[in-house]
Image (cartoon, rainbow, N blue to C red):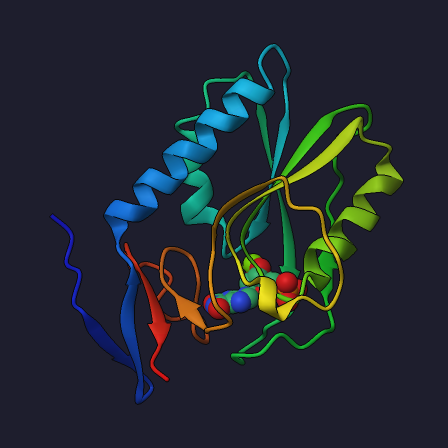
Length: 182
Ligand code: XMP
Ligand code: MG
């Protein structure tokens, strides 16, 4: 059984339990069901945005029953800080997505800058379609409009860690999601 303290500290910052692992499991299950239904008979390419989405993606993809391919891309807009920098660095390796149905897997959509820049870049490869599945979304933080087809849960504009999300690279391995105490 995993440990799930109601609160914890990183670098003297207090975080409180926000989304317990049991709830994350239900969210991931539902997202996988929707994708399995919508992409029946198709062979999508799941594009994982590193590093934050790896925990979410590994649970999600093990519930996806489609014949699919997994690719990764590096994107970074937070650096070591708790605020989106607005500047997005993308490292696009050679991607075989021409004519393919792409599903981007993201941990969280905040300002929307990362995902919109990524989508813009992917379109240069002429994919058949590009959709996004994000575990979390902070609609109150948007700076650009993005169409996210699959959203696990909308949350208030709070900084969260755990289940892949980090505070200066720490906290990714927490099984549950914690929010910075206000
Ligand atoms: P934008 O602003 O481009 O940001 O939509 C998306 C990326 O920023 C990171 N992010 C967070 N990371 N806790 C984190 O650990 C958060 O609350 C948070 N909000 C955004 C994340 O990497 C996401 O892909
Ligand atoms: Mg991310």
